[in-house]
Image (cartoon, rainbow, N blue to C red; front, side, top):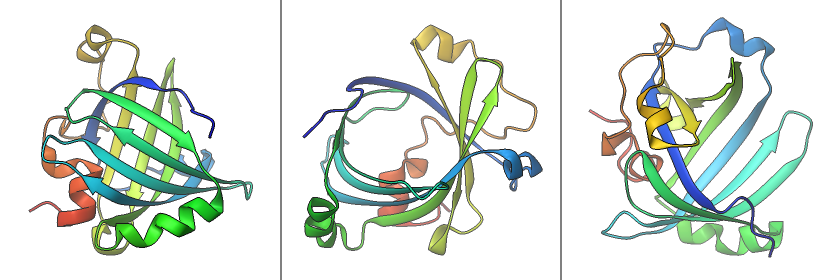
Length: 165
């Protein structure tokens, strides 16, 4: 199985109030994500089916370490058959969202608009090359509260616990 860009993920996450009109002009994909396992230390193994607006479908299995802004991440491309075989192991730990890719200068913002039981939740994630870059990021005016370190907004917690209260 080919490993994608394995390594360290440095990202910050922000709540967004509604869906900005600019997404009408942005590339998007529909994501179906489920968790095969979630360890007590925060380590997770997830399956993802991502359907891009051009019809391309990508299947991945990713293992991520626990953590907040900085985490280890190892994504592996899998076949549709492997995805379907293991998808049943994610029951009760799934989420759906539409992801919009917005360019803001040299930064790519991934805007996730959640569906189903998470309807109404909109978050923006921004990835960085270093912790110092992440800490120095000038947040756009349309971003809301920084929830990078709020575990309730981790996708694995959203999949298991639902909408944060």
